[in-house]
Length: 91
Image 1: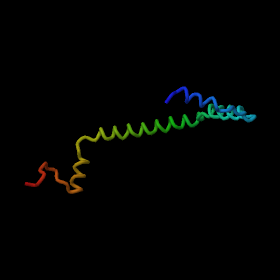
Image 2: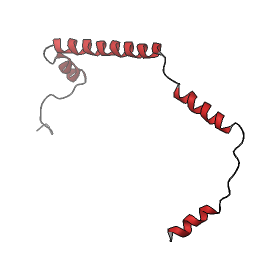
Image 3: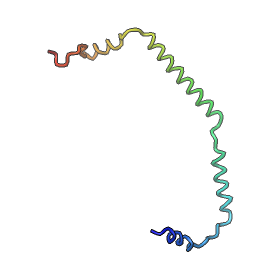
Image 4: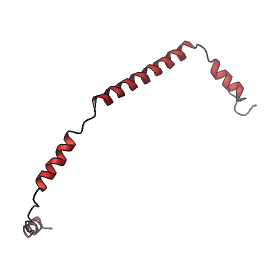
């Protein structure tokens, strides 16, 4: 394809008149999007919720670190009647 022929097709497009007030409507829509920010209360609420969630996670991890041994795993293996040996075929 010849690029010059394709560009010549664009010259055949006629100019159209812009409706009155179109410019103002576009600027108003753009300005409305520009000033659409999150309120400060929402930001503080999100920060507080994240802090509470982080504190809960740390508390749970500290509690788990305080429990020494694998008592919970052993109870679960016995409760589900699983085999604790490494034999695959019970030979």
